[in-house]
Image 1 (tube, rainbow, N blue to C red):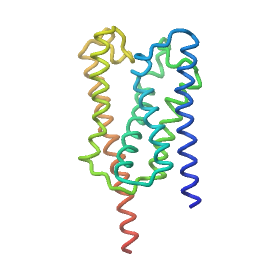
Image 2 (image 1 turned 30 degrees about the vertical axis):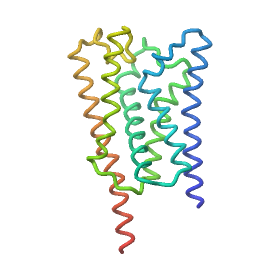
Image 3 (image 1 turned 45 degrees about the vertical axis):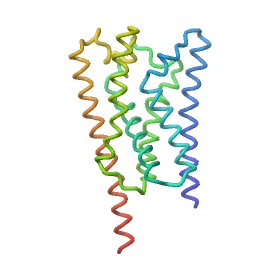
Image 4 (image 1 turned 180 degrees about the vertical axis):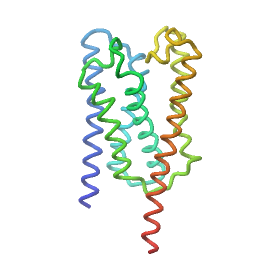
Length: 208
């Protein structure tokens, strides 16, 4: 009971931290007078943090189920992707404006990804997740890249430099996208394996 309460408190704390950072960004940019909702909600970082925060809140109060495990799996893959892609492709670009509030950059790109991954490790879902089903977690990243390229072609604005054909050409964008997609596949495999291994240990303990 105590462990469950601590786990729920952990989830709520970081869910509010993530949502608070997003809200702070919106308020700050609106105050500056240059808020564009279409652009703001076209950042993978923003979408993944909102999604992960809502999933954390849900997992803090709902009973464990396979459906909830699938949502949690998607959240941990997207947040791990956010942290890794940012560290590899964006953190060293001084001319790129990352967030309106520096602290929000740390929260959204470092703290939240680590917190969500730790939540998956510490509170691993009871449900076994088959890799075939876990591959559905790839749908959103693929749709996001397609959306970004189509919207960018129409508006002339791209959320990230590595998705802008003007910087790398479409071949360069394709290469980066394939590399990131491969990384996402590896993350999906790793997190699905972790859930399966945890369930296997519980099953073994019950029969021993």
